[in-house]
Image 1: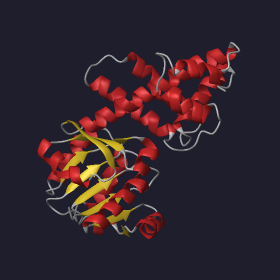
Image 2: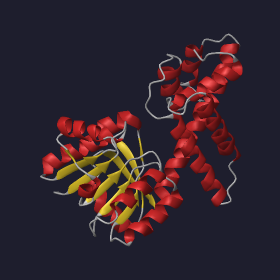
Image 3: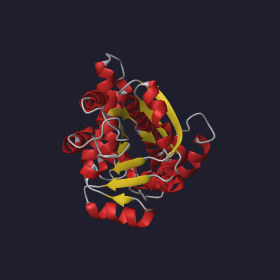
Image 4: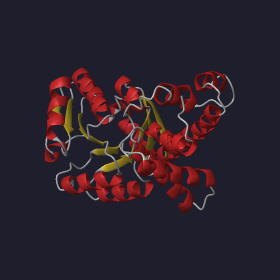
Length: 295
């Protein structure tokens, strides 16, 4: 499938995702354009992966345009800068962990230009982005979802979860559940540490039992117990996503008190620790509350 793609936003997730598009373009005779607010990053990407660094105006001529930015607000800014140059008939796939309300508004805004917008957030972290095994949760009409599937060179799994905004909704709830599991495990392990229990031994038991989760199996042993806290997914972004999940609960008149409390705790951790720290650094607040490191 020979198409021209453009990828806007070359952060920790975006850069390896765009690299897979560049490899796919080489294999299919297409072209992969890249843009980043810091132009040097796009130029470096082009030199390393064979993509082509371009301006926003040039990127607007792509058949399929991807965005992977911090929030829907940054996507709004890019749309405003590009809308006069967009090519009718093209697709805009937003891999940002955005807001469902923004997805519906942005789809309407781009439809005026003849551009079809799909919310397409991803899950799998930086390791999944590098391996090309991300799960993409797509929101939008079925025919449009089917049309863009071949362009998702960075995906291991593509799931159509519903109409416009559904992708962002699933992503927000997924990350809220990440926050719940991480925080709950942190509280339990801090209490065990205060009781004199070896945390690594406790994790061995938990991970062979019903209390296990990705937080206990991977995040806490590899990042918290080791005190490494590698910067992959920012704590401030987890707080943002948990807040979006809470917005969804309120807009649907749902009852989600655990999500609400966890969203507040993660927001407090972002303020108290550092919003740019890895999301697992939220447990540093649990440690402060217990005057006990989880190790």
